Length: 301
Image (cartoon, rainbow, N blue to C red; front, side, top):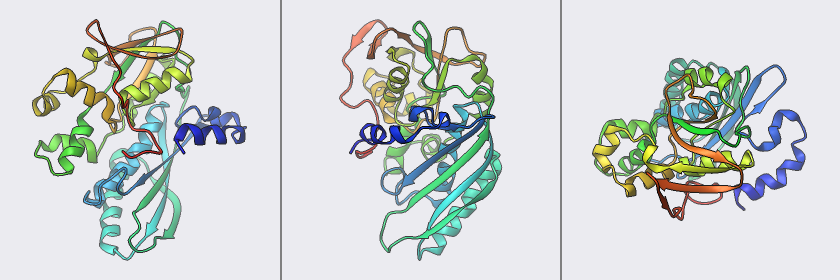
């Protein structure tokens, strides 16, 4: 079963306004409390060879990125942790989590433990809570809005290749293993945007999701997507490498829809219009969509 099919079954159960119809990445309670949860699975979202401390960092960071997309300030996190016989892995994980909690400004406030059968892949869940003002959703884009992205695209995808054994710079490996949620930027942007979400599964697929949730079409200019110097030096700045970058995922950049230049420097990469679907061009040339727009839950990353 795919994620859209599963969500279609769940939506009749999500009767609270806080659920936002399960069209967003977080629930927003009356008063501005934002709640989000993410699960990462060994062999799907992180490699068995990834350092445990980096896995802990990533688990917290991906949740805080959802808070950033709501303009929220973190107030606490709940950890669900599967205990195994590998005590050294757990100790390293906790040390990494402690570092991340301090550096990213989010205290641990509770959680749960379970036992994991021998040999089973680790399944790690964290729930983050934050306070927000306007908490923009992904559903609020309007026809005529521009689509902006804040943060480089494709670095984490290249970092995954490096984590799997390819040679490459440490900066790209860090982008994959230790993403940094754009919390301050999200808070600055939230009052000015019509819609906002983070890029987790790939820029193309997530932009298409924002457009679909808003009932609109989206056109993206591949040439306008920010492509860092370190990534260009590693992969080359070609159309092919840009297609890889916009479909790779794990960027944790912010996508925002607005009808005016945002107060935080961001790259204008597209435009919303009436209709539906995603179109892609490269400096004026219409491109066919790649067979894979990004990662889709229910498949293999």
